[in-house]
Length: 431
Image (cartoon, rainbow, N blue to C red; front, side):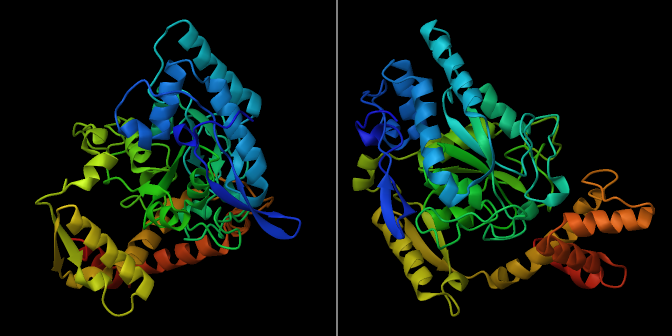
């Protein structure tokens, strides 16, 4: 591990509770750089990505040192947290970091994400690592290609450190429905990190990587980000290419971002956004510079949101909402008002229909999408002599209980006698 200087510059001092001698002990990783940033922009103080880049370009820190620090952190914390299903070989990570250092020494240009260690949810394809979707049916599968989002990160100099745990095929909200392991919340090992992108959220929260990719169909980035105390973002559908993302519900799935700050999340989103010829649903709209809209900490002392109108949905704070959640929402609204916003209560009568409509649509689409995993076209094949038995055994042994339940629900909702009553009505909720 490297010397401990100016923790705000890179990984920062951060607690992860690990069991030691039968007790819970708070350990910290302080890092790694005495460098003053090359840029004086306030954003650099909020962003690990920019801090790392400044330190590399100023030669106060090497990419190998950054990688070695994170790898040490990973070795220390992963046995207790279980964020990853697969880790890249340390030598491979360090080799990629050394290549970045060599470019800098030769005064060659390096990408904006050079030396940034990224974790990738295991339902997003990577050419050089297994991609299982958290399911036994794809155990050992290695795609022959990178997802577009992953390729864009690599092209910008990022280093993929591993594939993170998830609820099988993204179906769950606690990361307990993974076929391989359960991930713990870094702040309290007795609690879950949320899901389905719990591994990606936990990895950023525990400082096992700088940023991570997840996927969000019905909250699978936003909810674990909240549980783990990190910044999580579900982009607008079409903003990020879905090529290489294992399909769960194609009309809802998106690849999303995790970071320890809004700045890092925004930089990551900018890196993976844009049209992709391999995904017909990706947007052709120009990608704006998201970081240009960020506010520095100093500006928050004034009223930077003056005139911005914000709607507070009445149904989110009505009966049935936990008092703690209600207080948090009202506190956020009050803070927005202090920054100059005009917060107005609005009513969204259809709000309560969102969850049941989601379950109908997502289950129906998963029933269709997961039909490809039959042991013949895709997925591990059971040993059988008869074709129907082969299909049955391959799927019965390959899928977990949560996935089977949702496939059955979706098949029922799409059946001839119930399509209009369930699937069609659910679609009408979003028109």
